Image (cartoon, rainbow, N blue to C red; front, top):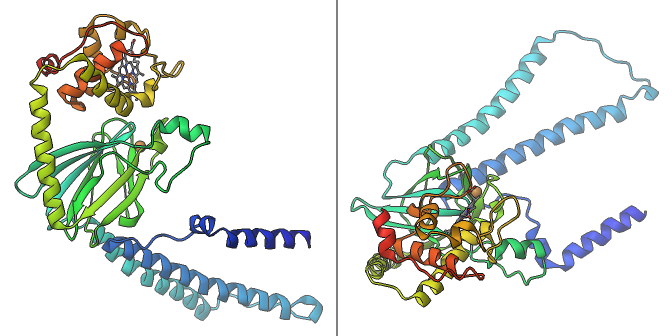
Length: 377
Ligand SMILES: [Cu+2]
């Protein structure tokens, strides 16, 4: 009785709070791409086949238990090797399997079919962010950028728990992957460090990103919109903080975005050739540090004991600047300290090194210029 009341109470609570009900999703999402919908339909079909089999099997069992029980005087039949029966119970499951295998094979083949793609995007997993490399059409216009989580100081917020969590808490990024609608986009997955997985339920895509390997998939999104996913392979401390956000734009808006990216790249190139003031380098460096370094070395520069060294007062960050540049540019082989030379442009690199040398009371006083970084390339 008490248990029944508890269950009723729980159900009541669930109905009262519409929001928690919405979160309580058991089923797959139909998604927006051809094969995400195909997978959804197969899943539904197989579920109904299971339901029917369940009803038939349990129905026969329950009927027999009730009507052929010993107390009613039932006597067990003892027949052996009924060929008819064996043929029937071999054929029925065989037919059921074929009925499931035909549509499943069709969808699997569609998933693998990258013929006729109009553009490619290479997706690279990093600890803990995604990188997108565009090779748009045959013109091979190179666009490439990192996509970082934007929830500020995500790790400490997630663990402290006392923040207002908006709709896109921990699922927003600074640079979305932008694609045109109604265009067959080939996706190539790989990784720079450990195994990640690019998972976007609405597209029906979940592919491992493995260092040294390329995995492949494709999408064609009919409607403009924003689609969210996440890394689905446990990949280290900040595994939960590398969301995926894809925005599909109409073809015209997409073309405008491509132009914008090109002029932004030209601007970066121009700013790399001038001499920067220390104040500008510090301001820029603080941003770069928050995005690329604070996940490990922490916003206060103190690192995490025994895992990531502090930079506040560290020998490298307060010592010879060329050694400091070298560590950040080339990384430290065999450790989590990546080579940032290929990830950061000359300005960002000079700025973050300048910042580390002059923040948190390091006060070394010197600075690195973009030209110093350029000379290392
Ligand atoms: Cu990951």
